[in-house]
Length: 195
Length: 213
Image 1 (tube, one colour):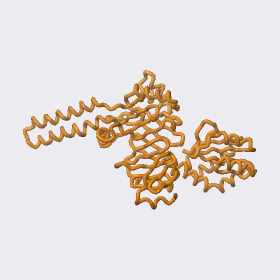
Image 2 (cartoon, one colour):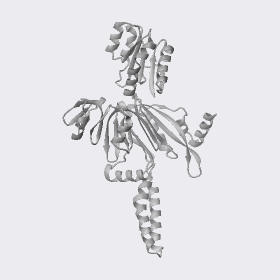
Image 3 (cartoon, each protein chain N blue to C red):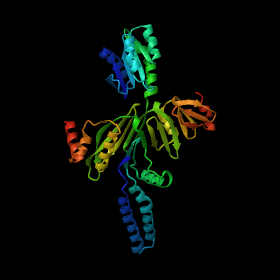
Image 4 (cartoon, one colour):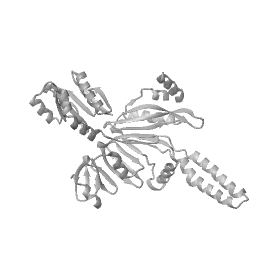
């Protein structure tokens, strides 16, 4: 049994790749200048071999099973493309950056970070997990960004079932189970903290 | 962050003495009262007699932790503490002087056991205790850090890793492997046996690096 938070969005990747491919085809067919035909071919090539892998590989992803907690965060396009091909031809499974044995986890501290969001400089909130292990090592990663609340809650409940202790000073996990939008809740908490 | 736990009746005096030491050495620390079921880096016990040593006996002994005892100048107590693998014994009457005398040993032990390897990229920040890394493997353009907690992949090479840690505990034994000497069980002609059961190949060009064995 395992739970994954942040699954790859294949449908978005297909739509994006198709859009750029059609653009390439349109340039190839409807441009009278012969030199632009090559541009069309390059766009088709890029949309299949670059845009599709980048869109299909999720930036943030973590997985929990009965033995391990695995997570990754590939924010650079080149990393995502390399990971996609590595998964396809070499590893045959998603290569997570960090794998932690559950039996080594002392507790997980849940916290948040205020981050600017594109495109208009708006402020958003990321939920962070700080994993403290018995030997004193600390692993921190973004556990939740904008979407995936349902998967996140299921994964956290499963972790609790596995005996992992959470230190949730801001009651973020409770807020995620309520109907209130997490951003509004964290904004309220943030204002209270800054008073 | 060094996690310190104190079990003492005169907690405040002892805590102040150790806080002064940590602050002087600019070490990040957190002192909490002793509790049997928590995991700490340094355990400090104040004892009066042999009865008090039961607490240390009952405490699970971790290789990674340091155990300090503060007690009277009593030969029997000190020898009993040695049997219990206590790292340092401080005299209660001259705690400040003893702390000063043992400063170098304490700093060495702290650096040896509690030094971190820090990694920060994108949405991941990791602080891994160097003493708990078994070995580091190089694979294509990445390194894989194998530790007691699991594994971590990072895009860099072994030389950069070795330069960044500034630790004499690690030695390159193969083009693709760096091992932590603390975790070496046995060295054979072509292989290194680690305490966690794994076997690492020795590269011909790196045989000179294995001088600790």
